[in-house]
Image (cartoon, rainbow, N blue to C red; front, side):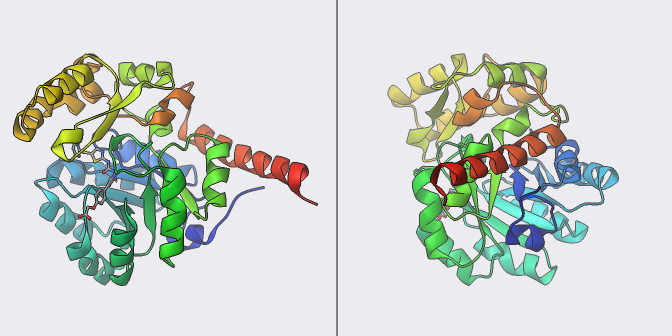
Length: 316
Ligand code: TUI
């Protein structure tokens, strides 16, 4: 038994599961492992220069023949170089985050690269559908990292009603119950970030994985509300210090300077005290380290089980 939706045909994947293109976390190795497992692996370009991303794309191409994607973080200073590189490398799928990718859509379409923006409002979704994007990710504020204002539960059905392209639900999904809920809301696929942080193939520092696995229900907090770029992280000394600075009226520039390099410190050096441990609310539901294949197989079998149980309970 498997789970197929139209999105699988659009993207050339076996199961409608995308791995979030997390900055610093989603390397070529992780993306390739997710694609090999039947989902869509996505490399996170984050704030990296194009040369760094080029190496990750090369790694992914060595490890898999299956389609994979690259996430463009639109606030990156290197975004134009990254777009050039993706077109040159003919990456099959692009997802975007943290802004409006409108001005790049035509260039990707010319190269037959599928474009899937993250949208956090109905207005942006409608605008991007008119430009011809292939699908959209409706990401609720349960997600980790940079977030919008609406929850997955209310954002997904509104985006589904507003557009005709396939919608992928993200934010707060960690198991088959979440996948089932997303499908019930009208999504044709799901994107998970936090659970894939704890994949064996994810190269983040072990301490980062441990912090995610130990997280409890209220440990994923939002900082940076005052900067206009709210970010969800796991509570630690850094997040408390950041909130204290915000409450004392620090300027967005001061906060940005204070936050610089902190994600890398957590991911690469394992500094989970003074580093930025970005993760979603679903961290509390991630209980062990597993392979990407185990994660995807578990998601699909759990979803099928939950749907069967629902039919038994309520179906005729
Ligand atoms: O992009 C993400 N998650 C991220 S990006 C990131 S790196 C970063 N670090 C610190 C500050 C800012 C970024 C870490 N995590 N998720 C996708 C996402 N996109 N969430 C929200 C949005 C979004 C927000 C506004 C998408 C579109 C948008 O449009 C604004 C507009 O122009 O209409």
